[in-house]
View (spheres, rainbow, N blue to C red):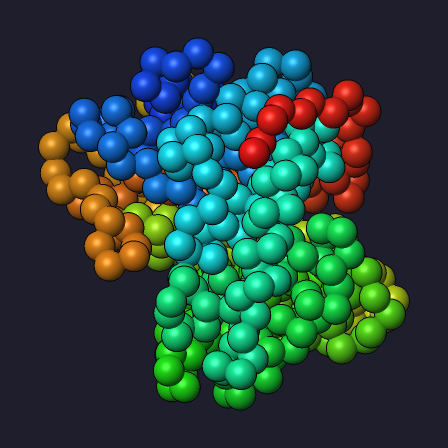
Length: 385
């Protein structure tokens, strides 16, 4: 059994590599994920590329390197980072703070855990989040620049990054406290999406819960303040009771929603491995988080399709995956978000979530990396001006 989840994670990685990884514009030393399979010209030429999906692809590659260190994968990590900057017109930043937070998290882990460092990029991204903090406007940091929508999907990952990066714990705690004071549903304990121009946006998405779990777990592990662990206890129970069916984390379709359940699984796994065990409630919460991840992973695997011997995951982990064809409506970018393809399994986001889930399950088994073990690698730095 020890190698079961490692093998499943490796198969998931191989599926992405075969179907989605491609040079950017035929440039040597580059790689990005084609955002649809089967693909179309606008995707294979990276006219459409979806910045934040690529950040999660990078984060998954870091997971894989922790699971099975390989020089070839370090090369892929370097290529992914280089291509991201080139495709983003030579810059690290864009107008969306949530996008930048996902990239910052992936770059920080690539440097700390794999020795693939981009210190100037991290400095620039950190400045974006620190300078966007506007409590006088009701935030939080906003979703995007020149916007009055302050939401969990921007503040959560930015807070996790700041907690990990250069010990910006004070600001990370301020972000966690803002979420707790502003966005918690008093009835369920779940996290609302955000506030827009002073009005509560009451939508509740799985990944909002995931990023807040990640932020509060980081703070529980890095501070002596017990309020963070108490919030983790409450939120894991709320996810278990309201956002899972028979223990399987609920899906949100394709497009951007394809990443929501995978992100939730990533940070539930962080709870299960990293929440300090100071009380019986801590142990119970870690166990509940672990069970949600492992049950979801088993279900997603059971309901997968297999194409050329490699898995194709469903957008919903508790029902059969649908095999996408060459036709049908594909995902489109509309008003700041990517909607779903007609068959959501076509979207890279859905397949990244399945891979992310398998890597998360692997960290919870005996053969998984313990607390993201540091790899003894020589740092790899490029000019990242």
